[in-house]
Image: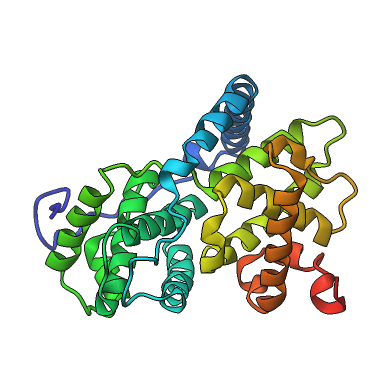
Length: 303
């Protein structure tokens, strides 16, 4: 526990009267905003330069690792955990990770940890939620600056488990996965393909942003559907973007050849995603920005 700054409990700091000091000066405020914009711009330029130099190599490297981190039938050895139970757990984790303010990357990694652990170890039905909370903790420790506390996670589980149980399961999961948590995720590939799209001649940044938002929503919903565990994350990302472009009727869609997949593979995955979207149309407004939802006329009028 961190003590108060002056070391005295209940100490009341003296309030000083201040005039309109330098921090209220309009000129300084304008200069600060300009410096912040320049810093952001410089950071963006650096990221773009790094992507242009290493983006393709990084993509191929991550794609080559997919088979190592992807169990195709994680429930094959599970006597108590079903596809329906998995769907309920991940459907619970989706709003939880949003409420806590964590990234889509953290959610994707959470699902990957769950599936890989299920592929190695039978899990009792009454411990399945604890596995979800433990996987979220491990994923956030991997990719977030401020992972949730054990107390937070236990509260989300209505304190049905103890801190000792969660910590013990954390050790078991790490051991079973060989302490290897750096899985390639659909979040990484969505970002990569979007950057590739923006680098193409005549790219429409508005269409790229809208397609990316819709594809993120579609991919998020697909995480809860056991049927999509058979698809590599890179294929799922490409198909999600391809479907988003079709649904939004974009004039400059992503050239799906950049994914390296055959048309037949992309069409098959896109068809299953389209069916998933049709069955979950009511859930999309919960995961999409309002400005993108307004452009999804197919939700009201049909495709």
